[in-house]
Image 1 (cartoon, rainbow, N blue to C red):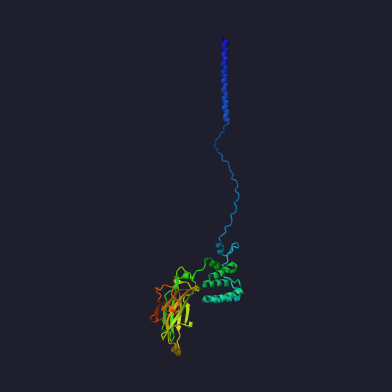
Image 2: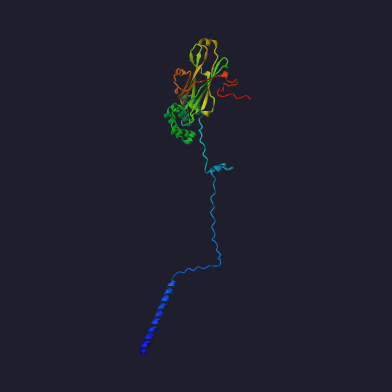
Length: 362
């Protein structure tokens, strides 16, 4: 081999080796540059504690005061009711300003309770002439017409009371509103819900020259019914028998006195009792000669609710025909009166309280 050729091969070999080294160095440099672009996270444990000061906390806003309930304010000792929550004043029936109108209304109420509706209306109309917008007179006129069954007129007067409002009519405004809202109860609807109980008859043999009979007439009602004293009336008509055999109706009403034995009404036990004291005064000889000697024969008791007859008890039963009234109750009912002989009762029995046993003597 020629020397020149050997030298050429050696140079080519050295050049190839040099090129290879340059290529390897370039690749290594490129890889290192790529690594520098990546984010490195280095975890290091720190042995020293760095003091940390917490930020200052702003002061808390003051809480609103606790307001006690209204009841607590009213009942707290030494405290007055809150002026911001005034206590509502209870309604009351307005006073009658005019003295003459007040007298007329009082007389009208007395007449209404006694059953004289015509007199009550006259008195109330005079009161309205004196005071045209007097709520007491208007409401009383409503009550009178309601008891008479003239419901259209009753509604008219209740409407006038309602139009006066709370300031003008007070408690009567609420009562009139209730009447207009609930309507009127028909008296016939109470039939079977209120009736006469069994009458007890006591003959007093110790009355001396006069003759005396005491009647206890119970009025019973159903448990779910509300009955006012002003709504009911019990009428008792007595009949006497003369020694000549005649049956005579009592004409002198002063011989009989009626009163409720238990006032005020509370319907304890579901009944109230009317006590009737009937006395036949002693007669002189001329009267006895003309009309004969009178003796108690029987009576007719009539229960009236708002001017409607609800029950009639007659003893003897034929007396009902004498007054032109037929009993609306069950004719098979046990309505026989209970006759009690005072001679068989204890000697200290009080005839003025015929339903109660005598108290033991101490």
